[in-house]
Length: 302
Image (cartoon, rainbow, N blue to C red; front, side):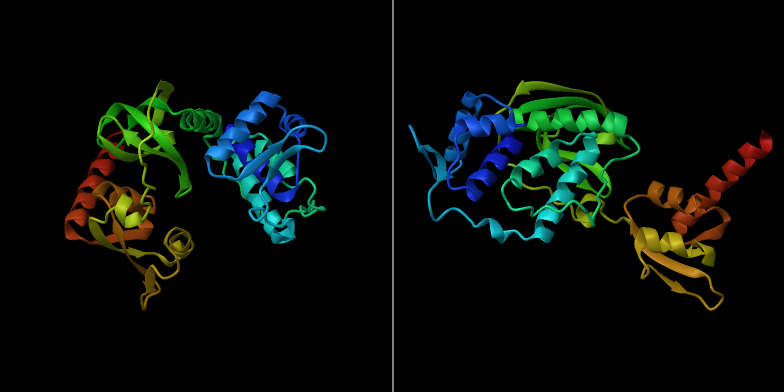
């Protein structure tokens, strides 16, 4: 894609004093005209690039802007490679690894063969998630809206969004964009989308970065206290950390934490079965009691 190619071209120009358009065209497997357009895009972005025709000519960056290739050490290059490989894990391709190979060309073997850091961003929903990521990424680069049916706890709706960022957070993929229905920027979870398509061109607006603070995205409505059997320690540590509970004299674990809604509390506590008792707040304790009675009657009846 164009953005990856621009980064690759810029990296090569920063590492080499001069390179020709045919060399870049061969390396990135595009036409010379495409390379010329890429150079124009870099110039518009403020990169001081000069070109010279004839024998000994080529494309270069003005002296003083270039950084020495030794600025990046082997561990730093390896960390970059791990990050790029993590992006490959989403789509199942080697696109970013190939980009890294191009970026490291001529660096004297700064990218060692062995990797000590492996990052896998793929999910259980890879067959449906990867096409969504590819489509949204292309829509962002080409300034096309996206249209999809969205399922949320409150409603099912059809949205048209101007996409600006793909976001991986809380172990899930989201798209951040301007929602034409809500007339505001919104964060949409990709797994809740169906019938995703691209739409018309849009004029980019000034897009703020999403505020991903948990208290902003999931504002706390309920402070809960739950008493757990000691065998639940591993799960509490995994999900909320070792400081989320205190140990009672009888060995039970007293958990305290905040939740955004009642359903989140009730469904979470129920996953522990008889090993958890919701103590506070009282209104949710009553709701949970009523719910367990309904469930008990349903299964006794059957």
